[in-house]
Image (cartoon, rainbow, N blue to C red):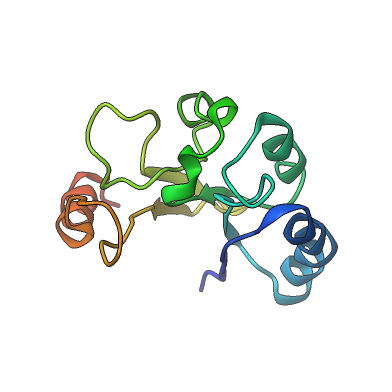
Amino acid sequence: MIKLLFVGDVIGKPGRRALQRLLPGLVDQHGIDYTVVNIENSAGGFGITPSVLAELSELPIDCFSSGNHIWDKREGLPLLDEVPNLLRPANYPEGNPGHGVHVGETAAGIPVATLNLEGRVFMSDLDSPFLVADRLLSELPSG
């Protein structure tokens, strides 16, 4: 059995401080094998910056997810191409920086695929997250 932990929107400095204070203990207490944290609002409530990502990278986080606010800080955009475990929604149009899938692994070497998709209710006209998920899942290596 693999224990996964998903943490929703970390918002600004208060969210980062809470994450720093609570996440390591949660991971240890519950024997978490793989952690995904949504950080699209972690820099002042909008977007991500290199310094905020560096701060969060010191925590036991295996993959960083995001949503529509990942685009809010210009200085964070290059990170989407530079940091393999920082995801943007996979159902954004081709040509956007970054990627929406990351295959990492647990400490025991078990592969874990994270797909980052954005819903369409009250959002921009994006590709269907369901159709994109089907395509991405079919492209993952089996085994």
